[in-house]
Image (cartoon, rainbow over all chains, first blue to last red; front, side, top):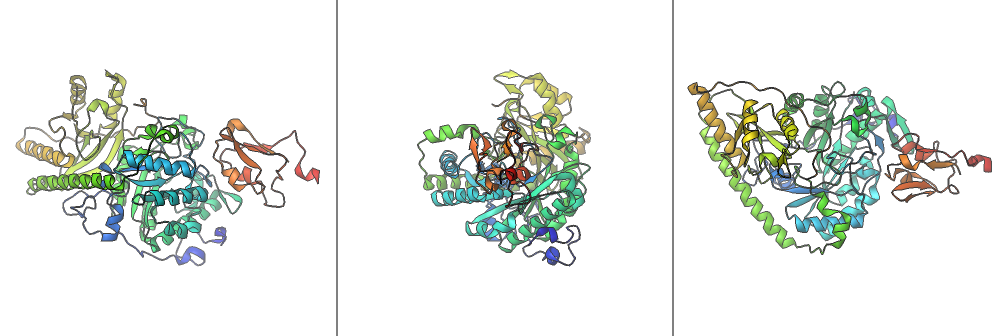
Amino acid sequence: MDVSECNEASSFGGAAGLGEIKQAHTRHKGCGTFGGRDKASCGSQARQGDLPQAIWEKVKNHPCYSEEAHHHYARMHVAVAPACNIQCNYCNRKYDCANESRPGVVSEKLTPEQAAKKVLAVASTIPQMTVLGIAGPGDPLANPEKTFKTFELVAKAAPDIKLCLSTNGLALPDHVDTIARLNVDHVTITINMIDPEIGAKIYPWIFYGHRRYTGVKAAKMLINRQLQGLEMLAEREILCKINSVMIPGINDQHLVDVNKAVKSRGAFLHNIMPLISAPQHGTVFGLNGQRGPAVQELKALQDACEGEMNMMRHCRQCRADAVGLLGEDRGAEFTTEKIMAMDVKYDLETRKAYQAKVEEERVAKVAAKQQKLADLAGETSDINLLVAVATKGSGLINEHFGHAKEFQVYELSTSGAKFVGHRRADPYCQGGYAEEGSLATIIRAIDDCHAVFVAKIGGCPKSELIKAGIEPLDQYAHEFIEKSAIAWFKRYLDKVQSGEIQHVERGNAAIRQGALISAA
Amino acid sequence: MPFKIIASQCTGCSACELECPNVAISEKGGTFVIEPKKCTECIGHFDEPQCVAVCPVDNTCVLDPSLPRYQARA
């Protein structure tokens, strides 16, 4: 089918081609960010909620598809797919930096054989690595041979690892059967618009059927292929996440319509990410001064879209060769040179044993949270506030303020603690010395928070935080995040009620752009 | 015989290699090169030169002015 013949992407009810789009064959309940006591959580064994067992099995240890899992399980991307078939105004393939965390960026390309070896090396070193994704640095399905060869090799050598891919969707309908045959059970499609007029402002061109198409025509073809691919995946019960880049003034309001369109076609999870557009990246948007969204704008849009389908808010917009927990990147430990020198022994039993321990930890964490939630039962306050947390993973407050490369943000209300995002930061303390400039940047990044939970903090940053109106808290060091946050919030409410303190709203915060200053 | 790749602009993405109907493109030191003898400007294959159409950096796959056009040879 020549997709250029398809009907208007913005009016799907119509006649030919994709006009016959079926609605809602697989209406999954999402798994993004549940946290309240009356909503089902899919974040832990103890809280499978109302997810069907088959879907639960797919998401329970996938860090991208389950917010709760991302505290415990790691993923890796292998950069076997450099070619791309579309051009996006937020992407520049030329720019590469080892400290840059952003899609489309890699340090080295791999052959499928090198990639398979890397997967085994990482799986042996990081037993909680459960997911292999192929996300580029171009488009996996513009490099189908390398992508599928890699999946075949990994499935044979390490059958317990989940396979995942992330595509722009243009070539997706041609490959859905192969995806299903190879048991790739998670597919992400980046969909930034369903209106081709908007699409023309995001995509200068696409390459399809041996031709380059531009403008509205290109955008129309792209969205038709994306939605067709989404439906084909949903029919085969392959879990599908939609990524959308929020570009203020171009598609920000429109993403509510995108959300409805993908939800009705069976998408499982929607991930709205902020545009990254630093001028030094050399992207069209970076160079023409297109701004990214502020924290509040992003959250308001995510909140507006959060309904039956859940919103992913824990995406770190990672590199196409990222390794580790979502908030960390251990890629430098697994360069091709180092992997080739490694003596890799893939031991499934050790991995299983380690993961069983992780599950115990998760169950304990949820139980602790549930217990604390009971303390909030009688509260009726409508106070709703944010707190920041320095963590290295496992759902614990276990990172020093000065070493944190990011802060996780939780929204607290009488219904509990809910993960709502994260803020990148340059570590305040580098090589034992404090960086004064970076303290101001960190404060700007968490300036909408009332408190910051840390394992440890020095006297100087402590007093600067207090001056800025953010309460530094180290008394919950090495305890569970949600349990501690709820306990602190309960005390906060008590103090407000007794008149000891007055509740004040906090301001906005800035989204950190560009490469990390330290590679540490 | 005429297209060439300007190495300083090549991202090394390999998209052209996958599309070339003449298998004229290969990697050399991280970027890609076109073997002039094999290049037909895609004449007889497609409406537009595939390397030009798929390259993510404009003006990177260009006609090599030092060589005669493919048709001129016929």
